[in-house]
Image (tube, rainbow, N blue to C red; front, side, top):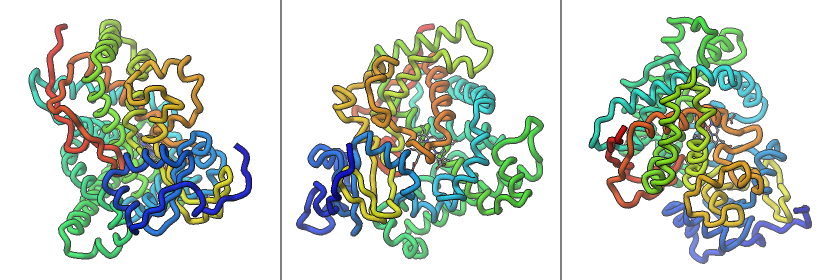
Length: 451
Ligand code: HEM
């Protein structure tokens, strides 16, 4: 795809609405359908105007690779994450430039292989203890249960802390904060948050809750001192602060980002996987068999378990293709950027949607079907790399990608070996906010298996 003469944004293909605000209205009402229609109707680079900005949807894996990897240095994060800075501060997710590179280097070792082996043990224990707390016939709200599980794992693995007492409040705070990504808040947030409106009061409450959680984590770590095994991620951040390499606010912001980004996405991946398994009994049976075989012949540690759960991993990959927890990634070019003849002006919005590209029939025949076999080595070999990017890519790729997959595979095996989950509603709509949540939750009944 060579770069040819630039096409001005207004000449790039895209909808030209007569009524101002139509794109915003459609995007707000149902972003998944809006973006899917755009790619279908206007091709791999579609242009529209959103909140007065030139906005582009890139659907082709090669274009996505160029923006996320090859020319990553020519872009900054998109408007959504820029605004999230008001909530998340300057943690890894929202930082830019040299500060991001320095802090990523600092935090990366806490996600390396040696650490993962230890985390896997915690992940397995927490999943087994959740599965053992359920009773036959019990009705569970799976999305909430998975959120609780993943929060407990992040608390114990990354912060040596049991967060069970705070889990419910943290979940409510997260719900309240997600509204800052609504178009009204994206535009008027700084003003809205100071008003006496109920939504603003909830916002202030949520921020205070999270501030308190993070402060308590920091104080506890100060009192306890680093763990004998070399300490956890917060010990390492505090050590960097004591050495004058990081300021206290940045330590706070990294902690908050790891706590939030480290659980909500994985929880959604798991909830959608249970939903798909409940509707695909053959895949469910195969996953169960794999999990049960492991329980009969247990490997010496949880990490070894992960390496043997190959079908379970394929199920997870396919679930994240169909229901990617991060459904869109935004970037903005620092200077005018030429992409295959399209000029993306400096400051414009560039969207790359996992939802759209993961359902493109060019890479996934019969894209709506749940087929874990798509993830065999052979089936994968013919697809472009960025036809699948649940964790992003390039220098800003998810730091927790390995952590999340290990955790999800272990949770599917621990729970799947013990229970079948039966849905209690016919349909669950995806709700695309910061993550792709099941709208209205996911009530399911816990069914006993014959052992
Ligand atoms: C299924 C689960 C997860 C999904 C789908 C997911 C997805 C993503 C995506 C797409 C990005 C890139 C955003 C961008 O480029 O703008 C990202 C970044 C990030 N994620 Fe995850 N994530 C998951 C789990 C986790 C976990 C478990 C953690 C931490 C324990 C985590 C921490 C982060 C952080 C800190 C970043 C920012 C990295 C940087 O910019 O250097 N995520 N995630």
